[in-house]
Length: 344
Length: 150
Image (cartoon, rainbow over all chains, first blue to last red; front, side, top):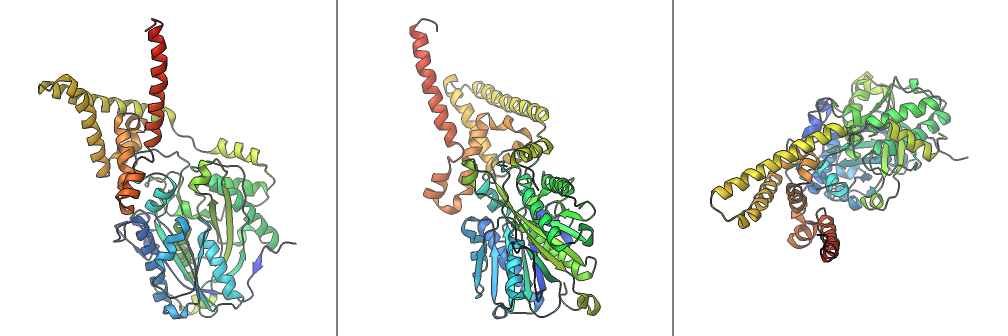
């Protein structure tokens, strides 16, 4: 029997988290809940790639500062982004002398890095770890689609890569929401090869992960305050609701998608919603953590979703596989009682 | 989930939001028409300035290319093209944008391997297959001409 659902024996606390976003994200419905934003999407840098790294550097710094820790207190960083060879993370975190693991989980990286950060702390390998990720609209556009100034049209199913970075600090001791369970995703490929419909490519993976989770845990969707997928957008959100219903789980009351939360679908021109590592990264590390710390939410499931492809694989006609890692985050009763923990 | 891949693809396709083809075509038609009218205006103005017609025929596309390149450079072209679609893409303005936009994008990678190499990433296929098509038509034309049809 495959050991899929992992109940972490000593659930690590999320001591602090930070979310840094671009101007468009700051203008969205969640704008006020992010830690920092830059009106200049270049973040003072001369290239988009450097701007993305700068976002990670800032997010990591703010996160450390909020926890009142220094780089020597952190035992390991698990970080990733969408750029070739994960240079967004490697350059962004170069300033910190901390053991570093570069990850590629496409847009699921926040959940993937949080899973590994939580497991290594929960099983006593490390004391304090950080999970970091980022994406930048312009660097992603350059790498995966067309030059920024290219005049083209996008189909309604296309998504908008979020300019944002998220960083979360996990520790065996302290106060803050716990990562209590994780369920690593399995790649699922259903033959979707349209890079402009990532929602449809990733949704089957989210459905697979959620179905496995409910079967293994015995819980029901309504046991949670929120079930959040990373960046399925309007298409993937609808598909997930549909397919989960066929599988016998009604998510309609609790299910939201970070890609739909971050932008206003009526006022901001983003087609099917947000995408990218920075989408779930900034939403989870910003607004969602705030709700968990305030006690508004007590128990949530976060399912980071990723589309496993490259521009080359799409050109060669290969289908896009999806992956979805699940992380269960539970509020810390001590935090609400004492009002301790991070202050913003 | 036991949905097989084929059923899923059909399901995903059937529920996905479609592009508004009629509106897109209408916008393209109007925008393309406006661009051609602007070019025609330049044509008339140049003739009015007593520039020989042979030169005007070259000067007009050059004007349109420079304008499109300029609009690309100041970040306006993509905003127009978003609505106009094929209306800006098909005329020579689209070609200019396709060359200038990757050139701007690749500045940081140097003038040789960046700007020089990446400039024709989008426009390259247009040049290759445009030239190839003209060669094929040239051969057909040769035989039609020889046979007295044209």
